[in-house]
Length: 228
Image (cartoon, rainbow, N blue to C red; front, top):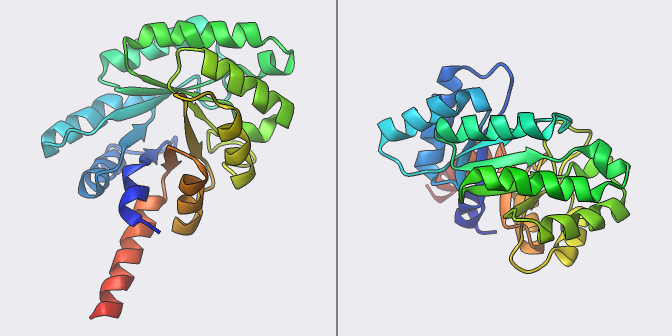
């Protein structure tokens, strides 16, 4: 297990609806200390996170979520959210697809929406959340094709607010059907460092988690005690 690789791949996340400014400051300090891939915060907290990272003198991306967590906002609302988030300093956007369109088999609408939001991103990273716990394997495979064909940079498994998060089976399935160049983010329910490492070794390129930094700190402290 490579702890440094786990942390470098982690979008350190705080999406609790009750998160305070102090929680965001703590998140940024932890991310800066461990050099995570990004901090991921709610849209209303993008300014706070950006300001705190600047105060710390750390060049770390700020990620936020669009159409979260249910994805059933209109495309126009999602686009407005995306533009506002970017104006506030967001560097990466994680958008939720319209699952009703997926269930209706309207993959053309899903593709159109993804490309519309990507057009708003002005070159910033876009991750597409498909909420795997709500989908059949056939739908997951179809969405791999849609996301691969779109302008998006990542397919992301889960919001973390659904009935289940990333699984090894889903990572294997999605990785096998994503075209080369489209990356995979595993998120939701990653409760141990061992699980995080397994998902990376199976093909995930990013991890979304609110727990991994604290687990890493506990692991490092235990290692130091053992060595001492």
